[in-house]
Image 1 (cartoon, rainbow, N blue to C red):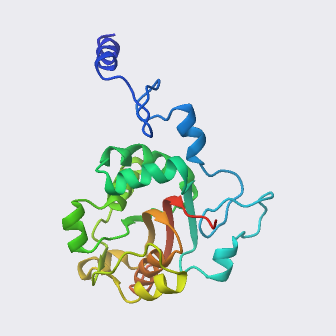
Image 2: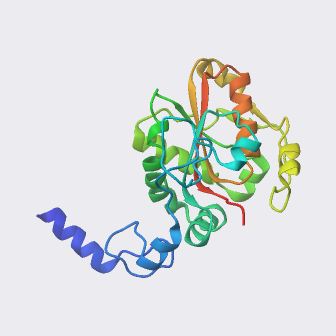
Amino acid sequence: MLRAQFQTAVSLVYPAKCLGCGDLVEQDFGLCGTCWVGAHFISGTTCDGCGLPLPGEADDHRLECDDCMQQPRPWSRGRAAMIYKETARSLVMALKHGDRTELAAPAAIWLQRVAAPLLCGDPLICPVPLHWSRLLKRRYNQSALLAEKLARQARLTYRPDLLKRTKQTPSLEGKTRAQRFAVMQDVIAVHPRQIESLRGRVVLLVDDVMTSGATLSACAEACLAAGAAEVRVAVLARVTRA
């Protein structure tokens, strides 16, 4: 009773607000009706490679979107929680560039729901790494925040330093698919002190957004080259073609 009274008092002083627009909502870490509609959560039949929604019914065969068929992925399976537009885009940008680090907790809940099939086999949870210079400037890695929260919720092993960027790269924004893959060539490596813990293990790579898949491909290839048994990917949002 005392706990309920305390929570009521706190809610009066600090009422719950929508994660997207800041309007009042019924519970913490929620979205208002408008932002929920604009969030475009992915459900139903999806691509086994990247989680993109697909038409039709799922069957016993592997289903892939056009992108995954045209560009075979080095990872085995992938899932995405949302389509990268409207509310999802605003949330990702706020987490990535707006110091809204509190968004990582609810985002990881959404990610865990959609990535549930990828959590079997006791995978190592690993974020896509930032180069140290960019991490110093941004002060945090949004992918690491997501990965840490996901690992904690799923009670899985979190390896924040499994991968590292061996050199600084320019922003991939505005670049073509070919340019993105060229930029990411030989950029990601497994940290030497993590090689033994990686061998024979399943790895789940976590990132905020997947566009072409160039960065995730570089990470997956580095893991497999170092002896990982399998690599899966989970992203908060998936960019779709216009």
